[in-house]
Image (cartoon, rainbow, N blue to C red; front, side, top):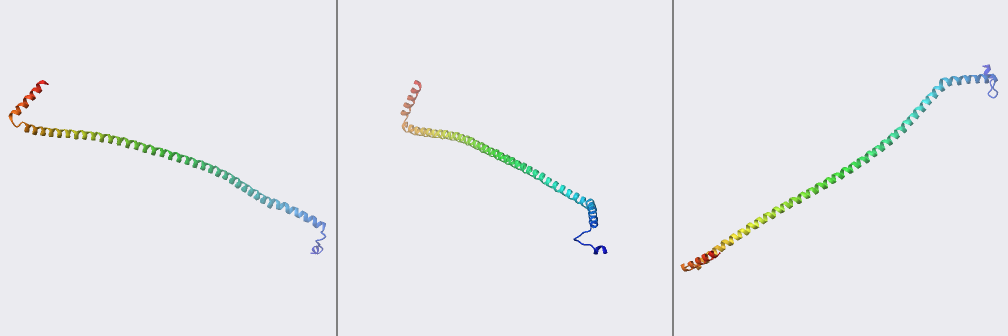
Length: 170
């Protein structure tokens, strides 16, 4: 204790200074070997891990950008395909409508032609019927006229001889 009583902070003892430096140097070497080196290694490992995570993040971002570009390309392709499919569907629809119109027009023309034929047949039939009725009426009228004019025998003989003469001349 006597040693401590003589100790003064303002004026250090050279021996104490040397021993303090030696102890500090030993302490620094021991701490450097057993504490600083593992701490430095841990910091280096952490730095490498962080750098690896950053590199992985950059790589992931690049992959995401590439995937996004691929997705946009696929989306554009899908839009183009959809547009093409809609165009083809529209063309098919228009073709079907045109075909249906042409078919309907042909069917209408066919029905119209059949109707004209039917009308013509009915017209001919009506004309024949009118002719037949007119002929029947003429025969009836002629018959009545002849009955009226040929009441007596003498008129009948004259008519027959005139008809025979007309037939011989022809």
